[in-house]
Image (cartoon, rainbow, N blue to C red; front, side, top):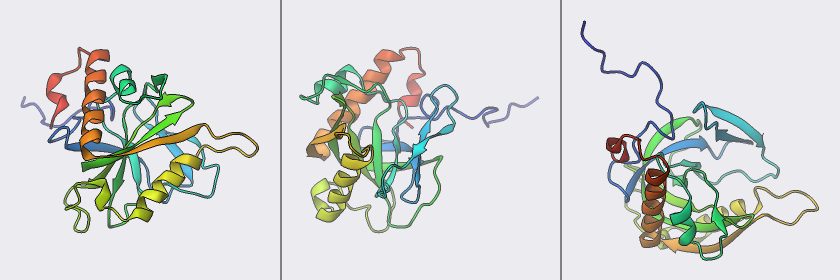
Length: 210
């Protein structure tokens, strides 16, 4: 009997999908949230399915598609690139992806070109947000540096990540300590890839790339 070329089971979005086709410049992104979502969804690490985390606490919604880069981990190496962090958050590396056309559904994969990032702290933990543009996007595909984006676009990202966990009457838990360009973002991606490989050394090496 001939073997089917297709997976009999869905690959885990974090562990079973390649990190990207041209690392660290072009990465794969698993999308958890869209700009239309009023509920925060988050990957359930044991199962790989999306889980409802919480309703958005404020009126702001993500300005871009939002998810993570498969086969990355924010651990020791990522924390060393964030001088104000006590540790990293132990999650996959987050990514915001800019697309001209509205994409209104999550739980999907896309490829993005890395152009910069936000150095965010959440309760003292490194929780960087890489920023990328959708590969083959007719408007944004030529962007290669964060400084080429409209200033108010970056301001929206700063506002969202500064406020998305706010509770009335409590001090904010998140702070943006730096906004960095492509070169630094590539270093963060490489660090997160290395942190993953150190934590999961038995994972198939061919899944690092496409």
